[in-house]
Image 1 (cartoon, rainbow, N blue to C red):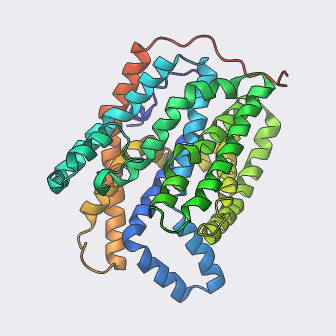
Image 2: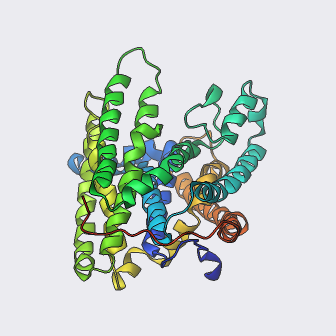
Image 3: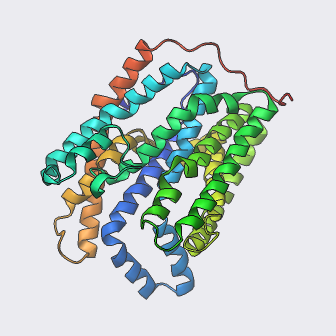
Length: 395
């Protein structure tokens, strides 16, 4: 089983188990978020009843921000793709797009088919054909026709693919030895925060489409590009520091400092989200998330085993399949969907749904994802000479 989990990576360089562990954290957060769609009122009531108010507020802040798993996935995506780019020497846009399509689409299309088998009533809805077309193009995150969503979490694939379209150009900015080009990438991060802030305040205007705030703050690539770029910039820093013993010594301290900063960002974001200027805490959230990824990857020795235990690494490796099927699993494993939420049903649903999601995610990895990755590693042209990430930067 361990051999079956090895990644057939097309790039040079060793695999970082920390990245898979962080993917595991991200998918467990997303799973918790969607479990909370059903059971959060029960948990919230218990916390507010039995925990002092000052402490309860912080606990609820963390629970309400389980969607942070998506933020973490976006930063990890930028980091992983850029790191592969640096180590392999880059690749043509055509090769990159073929490999990304092979990685994402086959498992996604199978998951759509499986989901429709269990929810055949969707086929009878008026706008089904148009919705299916949008899902086939992975545009449902931007254009949810008729409000029909087959797999709710896959809105983020639309944002992800939007980044893929830009990545070959952005990677050259991030990897350039010319300072002004790298500063240009940093300027794009700042521009994203500015655009997001403007869209946030505009979306609060009365009379606008009710979902505009959600779309502009969570889904549109113009509001989320910073997280992919910050991940890519962190990969550049990692390449420069991965052999630094001093960076390795400081990494655990940096990682430990990130978690209180992350919770503070959660609290600020939750407190001001529906107010003018309430988009600003998002920048702190993105920066801290990026710091978590970078500092975790710089850790060495025994600490790697502590922050990347095998069960979490396994969860991260099969996380794409878990992502695609966990909402279906939650629905199938809730045996009392019409009854008020109870602790017994919460425990049963969470355990069974997580187990089923991991099992199906493993099957997706073994039978779809890994074979496609191997095939693309063989059939696509080999990359050119490695990209040189030099320091200090030239003018």
